[in-house]
Length: 66
Image 1 (cartoon, rainbow, N blue to C red):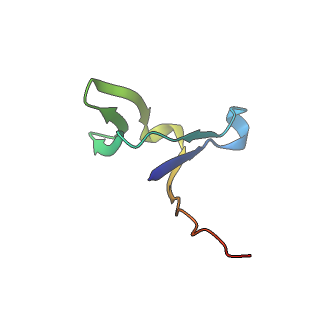
Image 2 (image 1 turned 180 degrees about the vertical axis):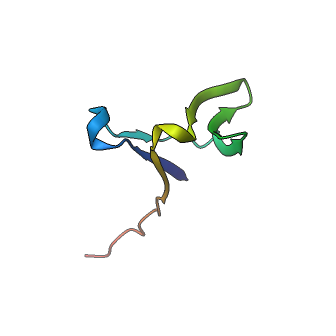
Image 3 (image 1 turned 30 degrees about the horizontal axis):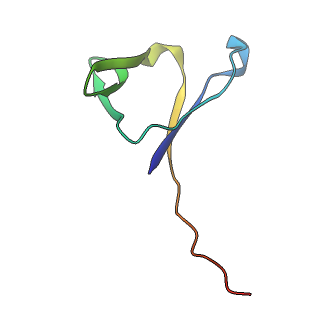
């Protein structure tokens, strides 16, 4: 399941954000990064804001034998 990590530039003093929703998709449209699901846009970030968006893939770990 993909997660998206959004890191804002330090001078903006905003908290980093992890979005963990399997139904969200990320697309880029006219200078905006847009996260949306079946109901529409959930979050839009302008490219001029300088935020860094990274997809973090979470792998399910296999059960460990004892």
